[in-house]
Image (cartoon, rainbow, N blue to C red; front, side, top):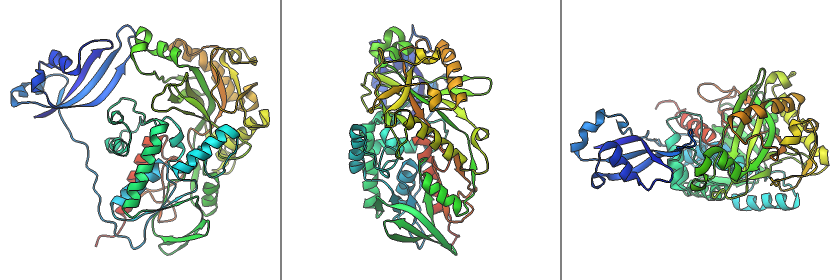
Length: 521
């Protein structure tokens, strides 16, 4: 009899193991526990004087424990949904553009269906891409088509690798298990807020590529999809360098920074609409202070803490996003003479600072004039303005104390900025819309009341964060095809995801539908 046991709570610092806690709560003797497996682990810190670990486990039990099925916290185990791999029936091989999360999982599924997908990625393989990113961090040498935004693995590769999602999908477990299968730690399959870590993501991405290649998939790195023409059901693709491909299934996992390709697709008649996105800064606190803020006296017994906050103002919302414990603020530009920030953590999360995006919602009413692409130009405007503050890749910033007092800091105090090119302290109105600056100024004290210590006057605010999501959506139907049949927009760049997990799920579901698109024989 396999069952799930829930709400197993062990106080932090307790000497009780999991088996002892199960015995105490359910009366199951440790010797009767068979095939014990943790399926969820969370930290409940709502009461800082009583922080506990909260577990769900699967276990096989003798029939003598059948009576437990009527007890609270005990339920029958429902196995996750199986993913089927029907044989690809197309004459032409499918083409996947972009090898970020949506492209990776679309291509992986297609490869397992014996479709032998062709993958186009404008950036480099992960090994070379890492060198290009390091060169930019150290020497400010930006490689336009292979950087923090572009290249194998997509923008999420140089992040924290967070796998938490607000998407309630039947494919969540499948995606998490695939990350583990390809090199992530097993705990990504059961932690409440799983993360891979940038250093481990490199291995995961490489291993997914190797499996696709072993199944006949074909990769073209340093290759841009630049144009197409349609002839009946056939799409003739033009790529740079000079590669021409024919396909009936073009899966577009472009990423939110492929502005040139999005503009080209719009010129070809793909229907698009403007959508909300967000803008703001990266905020850095000392990780030790965040630990105390979240966990109190038990902080030294727990892993680095994260936080999540939101404040709803009269006209705007201000919220934290992509919080990276023990990490660094990344220089994430993909175009010359612009500043873009993002956050990154390695698996150990052992750096001195915590960082998070602190964002304000931007609506189409703020930027839309006559084109659904106006949001792209709006992002570009403020990224260039951020560069112009110093005239180089030093980022504009301020300290929270001075920012709240409408003054400009002269130098950092207890929190040393981690942004690799340095910070120029300035009035953030020079690189962000006034409504963003004023919303941040109003919201930070309110957020500080919810999280004591958040409004630390020494916290560093580094601008600008503009690419939390895409400002445009490529319209598609229920069959996931756009107005031009055979083209399947997917993932974050197409406006259908916001993070690694949701993008991976969208890519997987798109590939499943594409595989079923053939007429019944």
